View: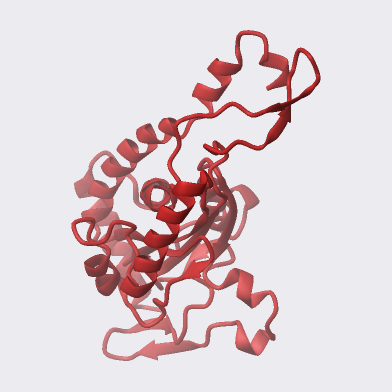
Length: 275
């Protein structure tokens, strides 16, 4: 900001604005149409806001989809008791001129195993998803599966055992602590990604700063600001996740048409049953 302080600070502020994510949400919508052709669904929900945690471990994809309907869930949180407390906290912070951050989870269901690569660092989907989510304004940390919790556990408490379904001739994981990704590659389990968003910086009760010209103590400028944008961040996170899955899907099964992609996809799924 110092470099552009004399006349261009406003331009920098506008270019850094989260309004930029509207384009990514639009692109993500197109990607979701492609993913739907393969039965892949993506959704997000708020799992923590302002320190208030939601209890959602026992809920599956359909439960979360139903409970976070925007018509009945203002914060897109599947835990209704927690959501009520979150709303009350937002109202309280609005009166104080403060802001709140939180945590959202993105789920992607029916993602086939084998997307991504374990060979090249820049082809690993872990890195692609982490970059996509971290690039969202105000997101300061990303976790895949139970990545943060797993760092403090023993290996026997972290790694997912393997099972086999005879009738379907398919391998599967008995748990999903890895969040559907292993070694940079999808393993067929539900993809689980988490993004941690800091509180919005534009406080209506501003912090202390320094006047660029006089170098004296001053109060920061104020902007119109929401108290929390965590729920909105979830929409953007869904979009960028869909973009990355679609990219990996076209890399592996791409062709000149969706019909060709489907043929390639079907042949691949059938080949897995021969293992």
